[in-house]
Length: 486
Ligand code: C2O
Ligand code: CU
Image (cartoon, rainbow, N blue to C red; front, side):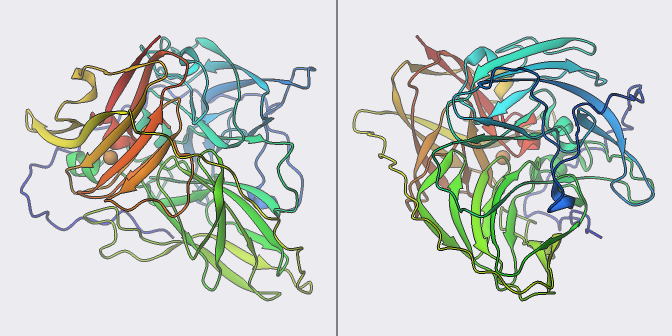
């Protein structure tokens, strides 16, 4: 069984711990029965990880029209217990939306949660009024209310959807789902494709109930709350059977609200072919795959395990700051098992390359953003340039601007920095350029480190959000807006 997020040793800096902020009022969870119309069984092979797909109710092949309902559903995560998981359509994760690049997506969304919510379409370059930020791009969707999202998906890749209201709690309680945008022209033979939604959830082991989202007070906020139970596609350590030697293509998505995932399998190397926005410039060989909260990684590998073998696919501690690696050991995400069938030999991996022109920053304006921690009234407040998001003035950009953002981390924990609605290129992290060119929407800013990124605000004026995707940090104020004027 997974270990709890460790009790942190005292920090060098003295700080007051917030009280375990009282009892969490579970507001009238209605036991929704709900139809199962949206959760058809998926194809049999690779069963434990099969993700139910959202159902397209539109007969036009280029329009994907579906229904999502946010509601609480009792799900057995720990054997013999049930957890009131916050779900889309009653399943964890929410249904996989699989569409082709250029498709129009219409989602009739309704809210049956005990509080307001929205859906943000993470990584999709869609119009500002579809971005799902409550009171900024749309009114929050109240209990019993609905909202129709309607947009065209411009880029192939792996994306996801999640709420943007009380996001640390709502995502932490289970509200997230994957989106795969396929490109009909991409090379074949990339392997057996599996979409793997990695996350975690914080449960009381005795009864499976949810641990409140304000657990451990200010220190929990600063560290970022990691759930003690690891989940892959909503399952706790499933066993997955594959053929020895077979080529796997895993579309990995980190939907955890604070946990960084470093994924490894003993004796197995990986080739990363994609990131946040589809393919990277050229394949990158890796021993382990690091995915910060909200990032995606598309990896291929030929299963190195002989027939009838078994190995854990592991979460390996990754240094994201104080307490993240101390006293922690690898944990099993799921178990990879090989069948007794003789090893298979897949064809050579097709040559993959993508032209990613470096953004021309010669006439870019520069924005300096320090990610900061302050005390306000005895409580930890995080912010950008010393100001929490709720009190900040927006940054400014004009349509067509290219900007360089110098994002400097001034605190003891790393931040996955995310900009809504636009892809950027990392110029360097602590002065070191990335190994492979790629488009990102989320980039790591290491402890006391600096990440410089280039972004072109080419289209779609509006108020666009940026924030740390350790959602506990975002909720504590590490967020802001960039106002893109026409
Ligand atoms: Cu996943 Cu505001 O983002
Ligand atoms: Cu952060």
